[in-house]
Image 1 (spheres, one colour):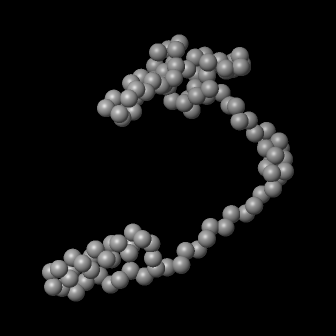
Image 2 (image 1 turned 135 degrees about the vertical axis):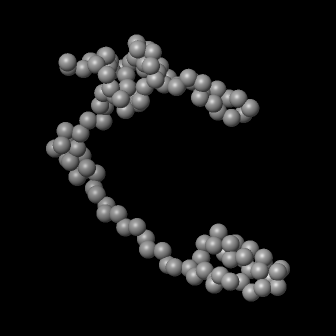
Length: 114
C-alpha cells in the first residue's frame, strides 16, 4: 500500500471516529505491482537500424533555423514569465519549433532544396 493510500485511509478513519461512526469505506488493499519489462536492445542493433532506415537527427525545423529569435523569459515576483515567444526574425511571426517554411536556413549554413 502506498503512503498516500495509507494517509487517506487513516484520515478517513479519524474523521469517522470523531463523528462516532464506523468507516463506510473498506480499507484499501495493496496490490502487488507488476514490473515493466522492456527488451534490452544492443547498441549495435540500434546503430544498424538507424543506418538502414537513413535516420536523420538534424531535420530542418524552425527549432534549429538560423532565423529563429529565442523566447525571452524574465523573473517577475520571483516567477518566470514568458515576455516574448519564439519568433521568426524574417517574418516577425510566432513560430512552432517543429514548423518549417521555405526561408529555412540551418545554423551550419544549409538551405532547403526548393
